Image (cartoon, rainbow, N blue to C red; front, side, top):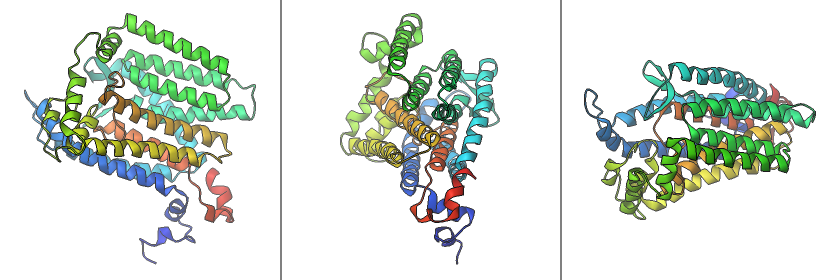
Length: 390
């Protein structure tokens, strides 16, 4: 049997063979399609980003960002596949340990962090800017799922309170950077998990009211927040960013102007990251944008369909949280690009350029694939009873 056919044989008991017959291939296909679309999108955005950022002592050639993105893909895809091969018990341990490590690094950002545009979110490493919050997001989701799942065995355990305290600590560190978008995202995902774990509707209502009041206080007291909201509602401030994004969609129409033919993208701020969806709109058209949005919806729906008969509360909470995080991040980025939400500075999953974002997404989706592995052909095998906890 050749190397190519060995992993796909049902009787194959190798590591790769067991992975192939337990991983959800449709989810994996969605991810690979998104990664491929991301390479094409970065190729379209790279000349505009290079043109915008070149100057002074630094010069970027037209395909600088494309080459870097391909490099992140070469590193990230093996990471995604490797993490997806973990058992549920291994995935849990990796997530809890990783959450501790990146929480410490998030604290370190306050002292040694670097950044741009008034936000210090990165730790400078040789050839790489590490953003701890990106990696902490999926790891915190899985760690929270572990804590909340303990309530199903003993309702007296204060795991809801402990996980909320962790959320508050992370939120304070993110606000200090400042990064309100990530704070809102993590908080929303925690609420979804807490509701699934049995949070009282009275408590949920209180948290929603409290969060709304805090948002109001932030608007009144933080210039950065007020400026972005004012730009969104048109009540003041510079609306240059969203105006240029909408120009791209107008220029592209339904079918786009063609790959590499975009002109409006050269006036976009951050065309390779925050506003890459607008680049897609100009060069490939609104139909392509709708298809891309549909891919995200299909991915999230597929995850929740897989969870309909899930009996393990940890797997249910962790997978639901990871899928919610993934879908919300995509929805926020797309919403910003089409002026449905104020600017958040959040990347489009697997599409936007960025090392920390891409590798963290590979880690998170790898964990999701590990948690949702199952195969009906293995139910009668002794392996079926042991792989989830090995």
